[in-house]
Image 1 (cartoon, rainbow, N blue to C red):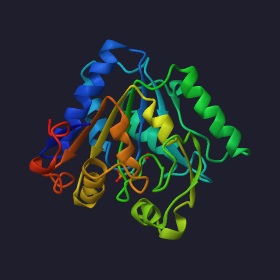
Image 2: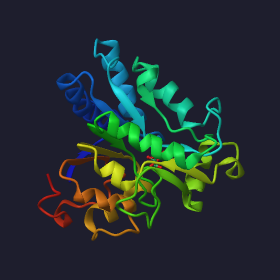
Image 3: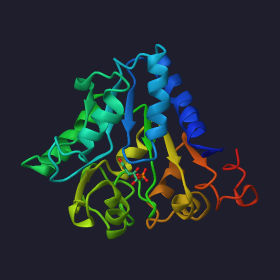
Image 4: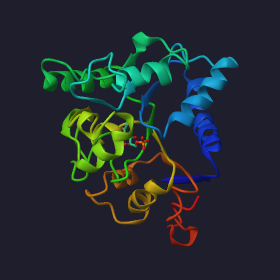
Amino acid sequence: MQLRIVENQRQLGETAADMIESVIRANPRAVLGIATGSSPLPVYAALARRVRNGLDLSGVQAFALDEYVGLSAEHQQSYRNVIRCEVVEPLRMNPALVHVPDGCAYDLNAECLGYERAIKDAGGVDLQILGIGSNGHIGFNEPGSDPASETRVVDLTEQTRQDNARFFNSLQDVPKHSITQGIGTILRARQILLVASGYPKAAALKAAMHEPTDPATPASHLRAHSSATVIADSGAASQLTKGSLSPALAN
Ligand code: F6R
């Protein structure tokens, strides 16, 4: 894993946008994997500035990492709605090319299988954008998830529900289940870009990058990937010290 430490959110967004832009310039029909939550917002903001200056994402396809079970597409906090507001509209993407699992599908297992198949049919993900949970989750693959897992319905941990309660009126309103791409699905992306900001992510990032690969820290499985980059601000990187990074990590 490559590590880039940046000073602030703006730099985090621009550094990540540089990588994403080069993938899109090389292939205007690239397939992106997109995360929600707060971490990638500066990335989408940086890309939106570039779109206003002529970068064209209209041929780019995208697959969301996850979606809450039981929130309608119209719910403000459904990831379908968040992606429309934070990604599709500001980046002037073609909505027909942006896929989000349906968390209200009658047959959720069939929805998960179909989603996994759609990613494969699209030729796989060229670049997957990830955040990291304070408990080390990626997507909603909570601690203990199988590294070979594919898209499926999962239970959200109490920690994740508490962390995400800030987006809802109360903890009770946070869904208890989600559809998520699996760790195996994520690891098949050709390139991975994880962005982390703030002190609450520092311990999880340290466990993911410094400690032995451990099912208790799902993000530690990213170390098996041949092209994974972490962009962290000083808060998230505060427990990573150059001296304690292995040579492979300290670049
Ligand atoms: C969101 C997702 C999650 C978040 C993680 C961090 O689609 O898959 O893994 O990336 O929970 O969330 P934030 O960025 O809000 O701290």
